Image (tube, rainbow, N blue to C red; front, side, top):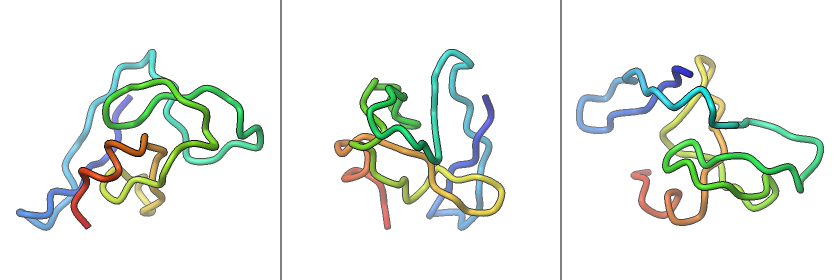
Length: 75
């Protein structure tokens, strides 16, 4: 699956490939649904995800990431 990741040094989005087996998500009704962190692939409940500051859709919506990856992202 191809996503977009913000490169703060270049000030542009770059293609960001994640495995097709990952279940990355932007929104879920069921907060207990198991998804993958869009950055490292760790499995976690969607309700435990943080909104990525760098991995986005075409319109700028952030994918869910784990707390560790979220804390490593640049603002």
